[in-house]
Length: 279
Length: 279
Image (cartoon, rainbow over all chains, first blue to last red; front, side, top):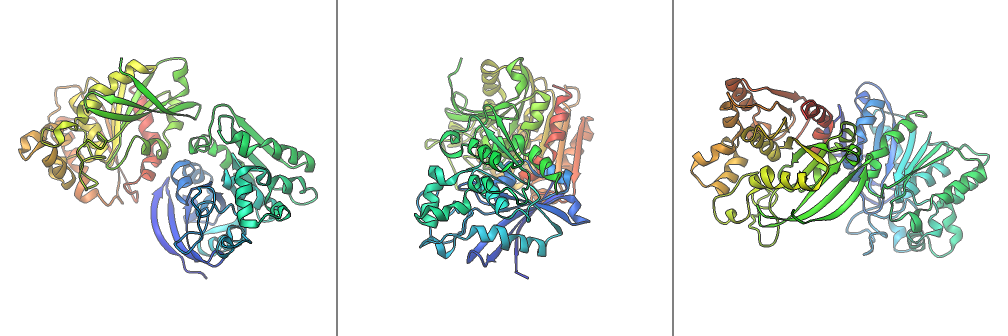
């Protein structure tokens, strides 16, 4: 069993918010993650929602700002929030907020210098759930959700691993990274210029091709006052993909809401109740 | 009417979180505050809860981390969060986190160099409510609450201005600043070494002497896992003061909770419902 070091422990809504640090084998560096254990976890194993955050975030943003503990405590769901990239002085970085540390895009990089550490796909899909299920009182029922870059990560990971996740949801996700500036910049750097290699990480392409396989139910919420909506997000592309494969996708649009955590906080209760139906 | 500049506007739980900047006459510097306007404010004036934050905070911490918008939106209460001190390059400061900028202690300083700008008492009691009531769709029904240094501020201000506030509440407040290190350091600097001048800002002394005047109902919540509890907070001193004046004070102690915003988030709903009874 891997060693993990407890960094903090804070009581919240009758449960515990804890941060841990461990040496990640997938990423080759020290990583911190946060876990919210609801009160029910003190007496029985609980299912887990994995939350993937957006650009510039760490394990802290969602836990501090989303107001999710209250509902997780009611429903008996643990929440695990990893960091958004490998970190450290020896880890490649870039001056842009949308590339390098804080911007791992949940892919396995194949291009130098990123291929040394940037394997967030392997970390989130394999290493982290294995560690969580070995170390904490949780079941093997998993859901996955995220925001923006993390919404891309959640959808893409659920679509590629439909047996592993009961359900998937996203706020303001990057659904079609091959076609928008954020995704094109990151994928060019991490995966190279051969766009065939990008397809495995593009939720629209994955969803359109998902007929015949298990399809975890998907919920997406998008604010119509989101500055990134027209250029970077374009959720209608995901709706088109869902129509091609008859995918169980619900998209809710909300007038006036922007890209911030205030939007997430306003609707996180509906997302947790959505996942609770399947967990 | 004073000019105020809108800095941000974000939809949250059907209402709006907004930040404004204005030139404060009481403080002699530019100040930022935040207001949460619940959906009800679009059609009718709503009462206001003033929230005073703790050491190192700005107008942002409570709004981002407390999860209060959800309940304020249900109850139809606006929330106003000022900064915790005057700010700026021309404003006196100190290297300590517990003195100077971010640590105004809600007093009117009388000692140099602090007396030039540090008049947070006047700002919170007079200037800010006047501005809020002139600029926003609110009634003149006011409640006041705060955390730690801001819990001291809320209790002290309600006790000195009982006609102005329908109710008061605090999380982990500094109730007896004359007797604890945080208060003694700040009061020595801002008010000088004559402890007679400190009494007007000490909630225990004010509460003990409140018989015969209006007594706004008070609610205090304290975590028993709070590192600052034995040395800085000592809520039993406030209970003793309440017994002397038959003050309507409720103190709730919570096993395991610490001094953080996770504690506030866990119990903010009870505080807002408490205030709603009187607003």
